[in-house]
Length: 338
Image (cartoon, one colour):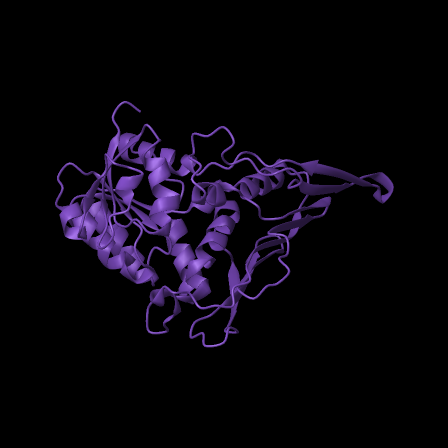
């Protein structure tokens, strides 16, 4: 990585502080030049060498910046991505990519026209738990897959203080567009586009205008059934991953540590970063002769959000194919907006 990518960040809220600046300031493939801070200038306390712009227009006018991270509210993603591409910048765009598949097509078409890269930030492909599930499935030890469950459960009765997440009139809102992209992208990364799907949503929190529960039933070839579920009123959190095949099963809780570590100030360069706590192993059960259960407890690999930033670097500098392809994003939006 001999030539770092000069990068600008559109916001220094929770996502900027946790998911972007720690990597953009430690990964040798990047130089974080500037952040947009409209009100309080907080970034300088931790990153004194990074410039602070007051507006997005100032950021986009900086000719030295090559890559823009669009990490603003969901309902601004389309407009700000179009502005960044028209300013001649590559874009790393947070989920959801947009409110509709039509908007996604416009963005990717413009990126091609400008000879620029548009990349979707799907960091959950680099969660420790998902990486372990992927390893188990690809090993073939479970036999022919019958059923796969992925969940992202929480218990939060209060409405979000971020109005764009809770107002019905805002596009790309509610839990479907918040946690749905993570689960859907995980499944697309494993199995591609489903043959068909059914979607169920519900609103259960008092005063909520947008869905706070969803379930997808996806059907794949060879009778594989996949269920994706998320809810904000789940008092007893179920395993985040459960996979059943003709030869055995695999179950694991969702306990990737990266977000919590970053929130508490740990940097990706710390030796303990991304390592799950003891007792978090997944349970693999393989049925042997005479239906004897053979049980193994598998440790997860180290979580690696840096893998996504390495992919961004190689896409821009070496024109490598970004792991989250345009097709993947289009399929995701088909499920989100249905």
